[in-house]
Length: 330
Image (cartoon, rainbow, N blue to C red):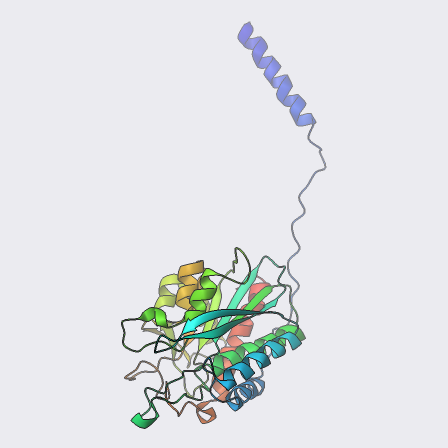
């Protein structure tokens, strides 16, 4: 009888608890994001941003062109409505001398929890050490492609985010001191110094992003954007989605399925230090002695090697990725 009475009491207690729960309480699902038209990337506008950068002259840290370009980038991103952070840090050059450098971060909707990271480096190499003319090895390069092209694409993306706003957090990070490393193969940490600094001290505490896209040397004629090795290791699903989308958009002649060599670039440190799955869109031509275009780290890296079709392909793919992410279609 004791066990039966106890069971009845428990049933009454459970029933009483259930009656305390409001019958009409429901959870309202969050509304889906509004559909927006994906804006068209303006390659001519992006080319103009490369022209402006090259007009400053070489942009290696410590140069007059570096300071002028820094101020222009901050002003331009601000004019597009971004919240801009200039993150100063101390870097070192090929002779291990210290110099001041600056990462530039342009944030759209900094309050949003859902975020996408877009990045490039904005400095140019202080030494044209792969130039065919040895007498020019100690002279800084123009950096139209290596430095200028990735920045230009992201400036145009920023302009479009202002013209066609979406409620998605987007951080555009331009890294400094990426291209001042040593080519001796024994000091890999001499490269990508800005990315290493930001990776350890991001512009906001506990920074998170859904994924990242890094751009490097994306403006030359007939680029070959293969599936770079570190991107495959750290962000294979993101890489596959972007490449499939690019091919579906008609850019398969540039975004190829070839598995290309890993490159010690800014995205490597974003992956390793912040654990944000990030891919690198970088030109790695076939039959190249250096692994990069013939203008790499030479004085031929000028406006004449830039092709607006390359800028259009990369820019439109990045824009489509961002806007499809907002609409939860990526």
